[in-house]
Length: 197
Image (cartoon, rainbow, N blue to C red; front, side, top):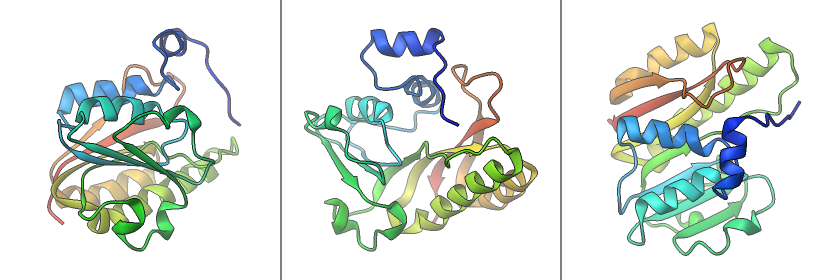
């Protein structure tokens, strides 16, 4: 059930040459919590179509690096970005950091991943939570101590209970529903600052 809402943010993204309206969600999160800094190495899990990469590569600058990974075919629209590497593979299959062209853990992990939705709320919530659990499970492998995390979550009782258990893994743990999120959407974002490992 994929659909595009041609609202203010959709039109703004088109006008500003961003690949998706979700750019404004990440921008608001980062402006509020200063998650991404110049020189950071950032991993974007499930990056497609790539608007978050467009934002992060500008934020980290030439000294930084952004690695995007997705099971979808590599986006040709990101090929010209010098500090970006993209991979077509399942992030959960990555065994070594060297597979992603890096030799140290990431400063920031971002995930706007969502399951293929069915329209059945309980099923979609469970599928989303499964992705969230996998990202937190992989965090010690990919995220350096002191690093930051942004992840999309579909709200549910199960998600709330699970996230409470994860709070202690970060110095700060925030929730935000960005202004550009559709009013009917059950999604929100979790921001983890200062990973404790």
